[in-house]
Structures are given as structure tokens and as C-alpha cells.
Image (cartoon, rainbow, N blue to C red; front, side, top):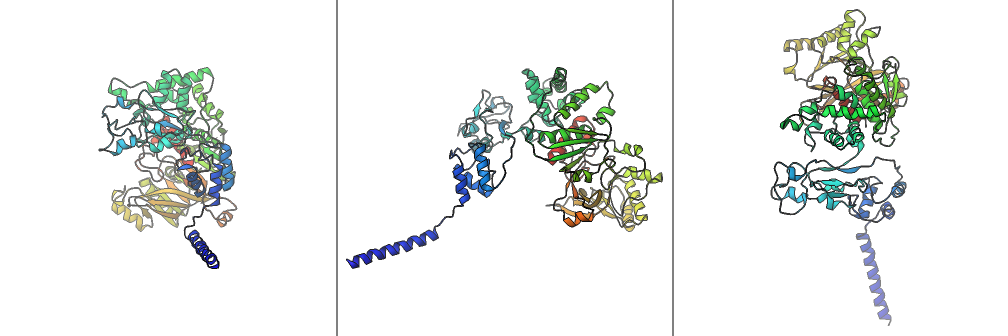
Amino acid sequence: MLEALLAIGGLGLVAGLGLAVASRVFYVYVDPKIIAVEESLPGANCGGCGYPGCSGAASAIVRGEVEPNVCVAGGTSVHREIASLLGVEIKEREPEIARPGCTYGLQDADLKYVYDGFGDCRAAVLLDGGSKVCPVGCLGLGTCVRACPFGALSMGPDNLPVVDEALCTGCGTCERVCPKHIITLSSHSRREIGEYTTDQCSAPCQRACPAGIDVPEYIRCIGEGDYPGAVRTIKETNPFPSVCGRICVHPCEYECRRNLVDQAIAINPLKRFASDRERLSGERVETYRAPETGKRIAVIGGGAEGLTAAYFLNRLGHESTVHEASSRMGGLLRYGLPRNRLPSEVLDWDIEGIREAGVAFETGRRLGRDMTVDSLLQDGHDAVVVALGGWDTQMPQRTPGGVLNPLPGVYLLLDFLLALREGKQRVLGKRVVILGGGNAALEAARVHIREDAREVHMVFREPRSRAPFSEEVLEDAEEQGMQLHFETAVTRMMGLDDELTHLELTHLGAPGEPEREVLAADTLLTGSGRFPELVYVPQAGAGEAEAESSRGAAAWETLVPYAGPSATEVTGVFRPGEANADYRAVVEAIGSGRRAASTIH
């Protein structure tokens, strides 16, 4: 009996030791946070989050791959509970819904083949050489419908997916399974800041519009008698529908596909028709505004570009204020156009709509006289947008004392030389950078060298072989002490208080990541006839010593707004093809204002 007990006890001891070793070898640690988050989730395992079940979603949330509100089956209470477990804050966010991006079904395609294999869009683009049904747009096989976990999609009679907005949760499952990106998540904010490109499934008229108006959609609304819907569609990308309905150069009509049959649709007159109905009714059509972000933005310039930037910043949830030097908003629209082309009551209607949307107006305030970039940042603004417009060279004539300097350290080359010849101006600084300007730039450089400037730099986008001067002139300039930078663009300015301290130069043309160089500079002379559009923000990572050295002023830096469609290069200020494009027509200035708002957002 004793031997049996000892044998059993020995076997138990060996088994226990084995289990102890196995538990150490095969032990899998589970983060308590993951367990807690998974317990907070509803356990629906619907797949709407894009992860394999609630356990997969919980792991992704704790790893920081997705936000705490990724669960589309759970409500606000679930999201808040998960956020409290992670110690983060949940903020209100604009909802997104699926939106098909194709407007004609496969039965209308010019070239189509019937695909008799798997009835799945993903298989159609992968097997046997690619898609055999509508190689341009939607394949019409309904993969997105079958994938939707909430039954929000169906196939319409035209073989295109139809979205039930009441059921769509914005989970993005349809977007993930569509192999041609025809159906995507969309929101008012996305449409307000997005620009259409040639590789998207959109109409040529829409791509030709500098403001990016969804032309087919607002014409459809008019055809169905939904005139407020048409105005709302226009205002998603253009806050001046009444103005553009009268003076737009309508490049959209030149690209209208109806030209291939007879003549273009009257796109701009239809815009005028819909906007006039709104104006004459006296009832304002409003667009959606995203939840408040708590950010404050100052916009300098009350012309079409500045008002547009402020309007879309407001629609994106930011608090925006427009500062205008004259007594009334409108810029060139008010003071540069005859009233028979643009009646005052039409202009006032659109501008008043921007104010009623929530944009604050401050008139009689000129940058450089009544406020500075630094004072606005010090006043609590998160960014300052400069949209001074196209008549900057006329401003010195109205300003006693020589050259106007609204931007820290930035001057117009022409104004400097005119004031110099009239005896109203001496040299501007000790570290001078001259951007463009041809022979006038050489003259300004020589003046500063004669006056013992420490450094004079000239910046050219072209290589040395294509510079606007002969090699002899370039060599002579270098002998005089000028430092020449070829294939280079000015991409950033940095400063303290109301003074420019540094410029960032980016060297173009070299393969790979462009090389950047930071120069100490107190003056930038530009050969353009206007000041550049810039966004001023507090400088990232500015040290306390820098701030104290400038009497407590915060350091700032600039961002260059996104390049427009006319730009042949995307780097730096005054990009080729874009330097004057935004002032050929009001619709192009509106597009520029949207890009500024998009950059800040």
C-alpha cells in the first residue's frame, strides 16, 4: 500500500512539475486592457470594424491602430466606456457614409464583356487578364452589397450600388472590398476639402471646375425640381454661387461631353438660375458644419480667396475671422468690376451668406498697421492665412513712408526699387534673399552688397545652364559676393515676433528625398507682383530661450498651401504655372481659398 501511494505521489509530482514547466513555456500573456475593452464591446462580431471579431477589434484599439469609437455596432456609451479605460477623450466627429462614385452602369459602357466566372468584383479584376465588365467604372457584380454587414447597400436597376443613408454606419467595409475604389466613404468635410483628379471616376466638367463643383449632381437636382439641393451641392465647394453664376468663365462647359454630340449644357446659367431662386426667396440654403474643433483661424484679406478660405474653415468646425483693410468685404469683386456685370445686391447676398454661416468680419484692419502676424498668433489664433490678393503693388502708393511690409521680412522687389530711386528707402537688411526678378534682382543685390550686407543670396528654380543671365554675368555676380542657388525653391520661413530670422531652401532636381538647407535671413525680396499666399503657425518645437530672447514672443513658421491644378511643380512659393493663375477668374481664387483651408485642416 505504501509503495502504491509513493508511486502515485511520484507520478503526481512529475505531472505537476511538467504542467508548471509547460505553463512557463507555453504561457500567453493577455493585456488586461484588451480583456477590459473586449468586455465593453457588444460582442456582435459583425465585422463592421474590419477586424476578426470583437477580440481583434479590442487588440487593435489597445495597440492604437484604431480609435476607441471604431465599433459601429456599439453606441456612444460604449465608445465613452472604452475611452475611459484607455484614458483618452472622445470628441464629436462628423459621420461618414458610403458614396458610389460611378454615374452610369455597365450596360451603358462603350466597351464591355460578360464575365462568366466568379460573380465577384475582386475575382473579375484578378482572373483571366482583368475585368471583363466595364473596365472604366463599376463592375456591377455586387460584391459591396454582399459584404455590407448592415444591409445598407443594394444594386439599383442601372447596375450601380444604392446606399441607404439611414442604415449606413460608415464602417468602410464596402470601400475595402471594392477593387476599383468606385465606392468610398464620404462626408461633407471630405467633399469640401477634396480636389478631383484625372484618375478618379468623375465627369470631365467637374474636373475642369477650379472650385471642384459636383456639376452632374446639381444639374440632376435642378432636373428633379430640387432647387435647394442644387444650391447646397454648389455651396459644398463654392460659397459664391450667385457671383459665379454671372461672371464665371465656365471652363466646365468647354469640357462638357455633350460637345461631342451638339453643344455643351448651359452649366453656368443653370447655376445662376438655382442661386437666383434662393436669393429671391430670401431663404438661405445652409450646408453641413462639422463639430467644433476649438481652433481659431485669422484670415487676412476679404476678397474671394480670403472669404472662401474662412467659409470652409468654418464649415470644417474651426472659428474663423476675416480681417479686411477696406471698409467693406469683397476685394476686387467689389472695387474692380462694373456693377452691370456684378450688381451690388448679388455680391452682398453671397457675402452675407458667409457671415450668417458663422464667419466673423473685421473691416478697416490692415496687416502691418493694425495688427501683425505675431500679434494674431499671440492673441490665441492657431493659424493665420494670408490672402492679400492681386493688387499689392498699388498699396505703397496709399501708404506714406515707402515700401509696405505686411509680412514679416517679405518685400516686393519692384516696390523696393521704386522707393529706392525716389530716395524714400535704404537697404532692407543684412541677410538678404532675392527670389526671381531678372535684372531687377541683380540691381537690388548690388545695392545691398555696396551697403555692406553680410550675405546676399539669389534663388533660381532653373539650373545654371538655363538661368536668365549669361555665364559672364553670373561669374561677375559671384565675384561681387553674391551667393547663387540654382534648382532651388523657398519652402518655409521662420521668425520671432515680427521679424524674419530663417528661410528653408529645398534643392530640386536631385533624385530621392530633396535636400533642404536653412539659411539665416532677415529679408526676402520677391520679384512677383504680389505677396505669396502663406499660412503662419506657431513654430513646432521652438525653445523657451528663443521666445525669451524676443521679449516673450512666440516663434512662428510658414506653410505653403497645397499646389493648384495649374502648377507644374508642387514645391515652394510661386510655383511655375501657378504664380498668377489664381487671379485670372474668381472661380480660380475660390479654388485657391479651398486649398488654403484644406492645408490648415
